[in-house]
Image (cartoon, rainbow over all chains, first blue to last red):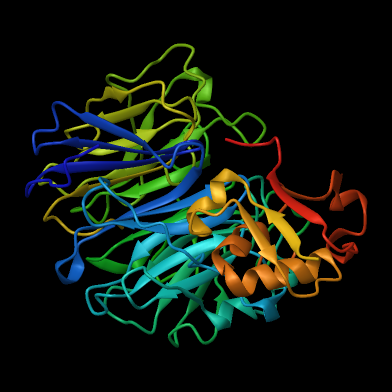
Length: 375
Length: 93
């Protein structure tokens, strides 16, 4: 456990696994890491977040008990103690006919709304909190969407896993689900339209349907909010018009199948991915664990392998297990289903293993104390 | 006679430490007994039932020694003085 305090500039890695959460902490140098946990032993944690808006230093974790259901827990002392809400704080209304399976994403909202957080859940829906994560209500425009009966679960379940609020316009937001694809709202969540033009659905007879794609992750940079990057279930895309249309940017990657995608915190044309060999073999291509980075918005991608295992590395990195911190030269980190955490202190050029033998890793989020909330 | 509901250890934190809850009111079915329990200890039934009022998939409820999954589910009738036991299934993390 931490002692409940971390100094400004400390680096935190929140790691969710199938059997609990772990917290890795380091100073700004990111040379040495201290592991605490497991928090919530035996419960799976598919979503974690850190929120330091409005004077908070709040860590959030979505826990799922195999028996007793799912809830969102809060810590204001860096994991030393956690709330255990009496009533489960994220629930579908009885009238919906739906029951919560688990939470897949927790996202602090924009600076304009400093007490708002968002959660993406299974079965696919978006929840909003207006009290910094204490209570949650579903967004009706998605809950009652006319496409809902046709959304089909992917391998992980029917989950809304990606939330991209527009940084300058609170009426606009984009979400992604598997399956279903990308949806966006321009009216503050009242109505949502599918936004998948150009994104292929390899597993459907119609390869370019209006919706039904299995989108795995979408990222954007606040400096260029209308530009988006998308890792698809087969396909790597960029949009320059806030998701209205998408162009293939799988230029020079060993596979355009993958799950995770991470924006560079300071460079809007720099994006990271970890390709997987195929949907039938979801491991690093040729058993070589490599992160790929574009610095030109997808025109080209370079392999980053220094320090990563290049033999017999049958590793899998799922959709929320790649992250970056916000130091001037950012750290980039990812976790594997085999329980390893790798990190780079130099924006991906060189890597070291910073944890091993954890349970299968579901998500990793990095934060710098005093450096902003997780995105 | 009262209906007794025996809780698993994992739910004591939501039952103010009690391991058995006694219901004096009439409870003709398992569902009715859980509804009465919900009025007293809603945090317990949050963990036992989904938002739709269904038994969570990995929670078992027994009347005597019989699982209600092999009887009539929540519609299973309760005899006077029955003991209802809530047990997590063998599955787990």
